[in-house]
Length: 151
Image (cartoon, rainbow, N blue to C red; front, top):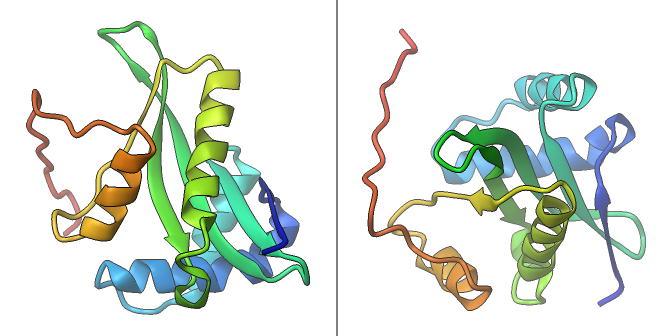
């Protein structure tokens, strides 16, 4: 499959927004294309995330990954949180997810990060298999907790 992976820009929103919307629906969120456009537009304009997109030879968006910059106090170094990874159902099984993950890894190394971090639902076994195949290690040392703040 002829594929291009590159960092998304504001000009890619028409291809990115529908992918992001379907991704959110996977996590049981309602479809909201306007909200998705606003959210992604703000992240790109404010340079608050790095989004890599996979494009077909005819410039259709096939998938994306989104990284958020952060820091590790213990390591006293930059890290990136790989918050999102999505490939359209029709394009799955073609190595696109792996290519997006490798692009994120390459970016993190070039940016001087000491690690990438991600989390996924326990039931998302397909994604876990891919992560482990590419060298990601499941954390067995730390428990993760969340505190909801939305009213």
